[in-house]
Amino acid sequence: MARCILETSENQCNRRNYVHLVRVRINSDNYPISRCYPFNIPALRETPELTFRGPITFFVGENGSGKSTLLEAIARRCSIPLWDKPRRHVAHNNPYETSLADYVTVMWANGIVPGSLFRAETFRDFADFLDDVALCDPGRLKYHGGHILNTLSHGEAILTYFSGRYHIKGLYLLDEPESALSPSSQVKFLRLLQRLEAEGHAQFIMATHSPILLAFPGAQIFSFDPPRIQEVDYEDTIQYRLYKQFFTDRSAFLKTQGTSECGGKEAIN
Image (cartoon, rainbow, N blue to C red; front, side, top):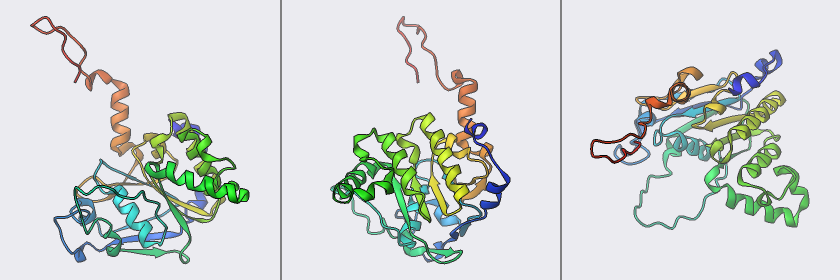
């Protein structure tokens, strides 16, 4: 696993105490409604606050558990600009959809710092914008890796952007950064995180499903599985346990094809 590939040092362990955002308080007692998203998410109703001890933090949990929702609320509360696609659907209208930030309080260690929110789902459009800016101002290229991003593959562009953007002091929120990264690219990202941690200027909070990213040495991991958000060890995450079980005996998860009593083949469930 990546944990074995990455090296740790006493200097890096000391730097893990360097954080910008110290605490997030979720004021669920003041929610205006309980039946509508995001106020109906159990983890965001039953958790009063999160305290960050180091510069690398992961949010884990099932789909719909509130990871990305809280990440976006933190970004809004910290005045981090959000890059969103225009919404074209009219199937539903939820007036509370982006309101969680109004019920979140943040505490800084030494004053507010700049930052960004990365979303894999909107990165291609964002990269188009960065490339257009770089055509007018080539000096901007160094801030996103020195390349026109959309001449690269999706995963290569993301790694290139990470390598340039995150050398600047700030708070960086990432929503499922592994989405376009192969396993080997995820390990490259871990190594980049380790170098950035050693520089001692950036704090990362990431929502992820990747057991590779979660293996970062000394990372703080918060599980959003009900009933409330709680800190867990790497080996206790569902990501680690499920992958370990699957690779140990995948037949326990998959029914093999066989011949049915009617002479046909049974489907794999």
